[in-house]
Length: 398
Image (cartoon, rainbow, N blue to C red; front, side, top):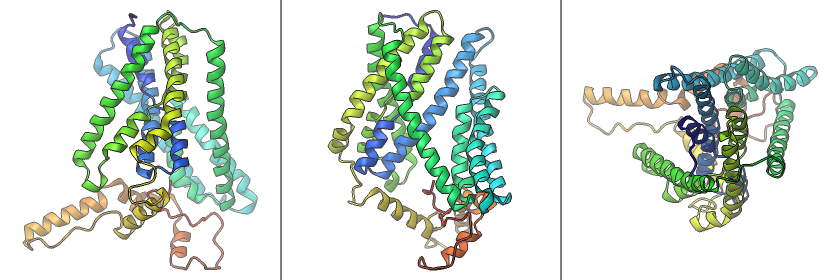
């Protein structure tokens, strides 16, 4: 129906694979959906954005310099963009954590400076990555993850309240602006509606491809997960249904108009706009009905998502981050050695244990929290400035 060259097909596939379930997640929060399903949908969306940008930039480079580009070079360029951007973001995040820990900015007359630096550090990460020819959006994403987990606890209480409110405000403004911009663009931009068949079959095949992706990946994940942590079929169906296309796909499609001036970019942009509008209206409008039909509103035990998080967290902390190994096996030296290896692997092999035992003590100030944990919640001892009593051992705190 439409002869789209191979590299342009890869560019379109990269940008249209980015999910943006802003509408779905807002409905999840309103209805109190299971916390594990919320984490799956949100985590997939965040990582998909980073992967889509890196893949699109890689394919754009292949389109610009077609000579001498074999498969190995394409993979190397993708890893260079993604890993380089991620490393720049993580590095800036760790530097900010050390700065806020040791600079002593949590005193009264420096809290404005503290808040300003916390807001500007992600922008520095963005500019650093762009200056190095990498992806600033991927870099700023990982900077935000690291700063939330390690830098934010080092802020004073007033700075924490300010930056939380500030980022919540600008995120709401950004989401609203994107949808307003998309509405204006649909009405004002020139679109190529002469290839309706390409748009129609694109909508069908992204649904088929998403089903193949979600169910096959969930099957592979369930093979290695214990029985109590497997992804149930109703969560897999909800995850498949939550594949809206939104801001990231729209932005990359808008960029493709400039990257592909021979007309293919205009067709890709028109198809992406149609897919975004249809998925937001149809899927977003029927999400509540879908959740009720799949019976995933709340969890299976009748507890709220917050109660579920609290239960999981308490179990996690009681076991120090892992399930203690059993010593009921035979007491031969070989068995004891195997059990010691298994215990070491569980205690030091997971990222959660490494974060708790090494990274968090190094990058954050824990003294105030450790003192507070030994006292009752009704203690009248004033907290140190810059300490909020956040449980930094809690894997769900960020």
